[in-house]
Image (cartoon, rainbow, N blue to C red; front, side, top):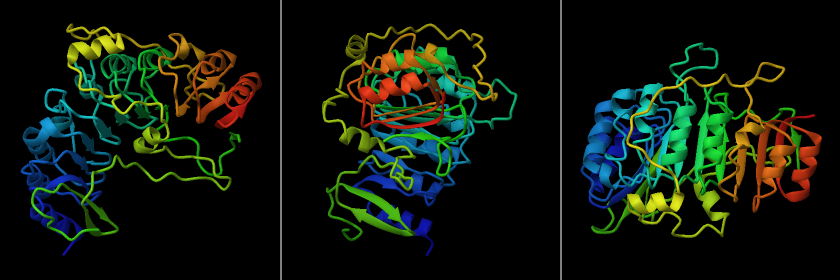
Length: 377
């Protein structure tokens, strides 16, 4: 029996108690249909699975009101026909949304994130642009308008990761930095992946059996081709971190690691506010008026022709003062360093370039901070 067939059998056997499933690459349409009949189901990780628009829509319509996590990275069969229906109305309690490598375009992102669409409980968002770096088409980009909408209407974001977002400028990044007060992890890359990789020239510092008892929640996590049932609360899992020879963190920490490493973050950081209460907490204005498309400025390029952010992205300051990780395609200067000096802590800083003065200031303020920057000027 294949691993996908075994996973489907286990889902059907535990349908009444299943709360979460991580079936990377093994989830099929049949499995999603079975999950749509699981009354306690709240968390789905279907990374790399061959699921269709129809199956995903069936799950969202049946279980959307209770879904807390939806990880769809590398589900290459999905299109805008299903992704465009992932709205706050369909998923009112969603906290994690991963659309990495989903081939949708700007119009879909604008349906998900605009000034009339509010995600009050979303805390972990991951997007990747739908086109390669060489494409000249401007209608397929994650742009400043979308970032401004995210900054206003996703007030509880803790982790935001955007890759291949060629249409974002300093103005769009400033909407995120200046509006989101709970951010701990921010990654905004013009390239399609993290440019810091092993070998790069960077400036561095410093199991229960299947069919558990009825009424007992079960989370399912297939690993290495076998399916394992665990009678425990599901965790917010993320990618395993990788390190260089000297132990510097190169890949992104999981969202659970970020929350665990920040004791100052209150356990009720995502309170069950109604819409009006969330607005008072964040101070972010809302509007029901439709978006008016506007032309974004051309992203700045450095001497090598690479898109970069500058200190202009900090023109609105930093709303959050407890960053765990900042990974930006940025040229850090003393203006950036003066803003970072107001942070309570900073664990990892990655970027394109840093001036010697800025590097000295940041090292003095955060001696334990790991800096991974391509060039020092």
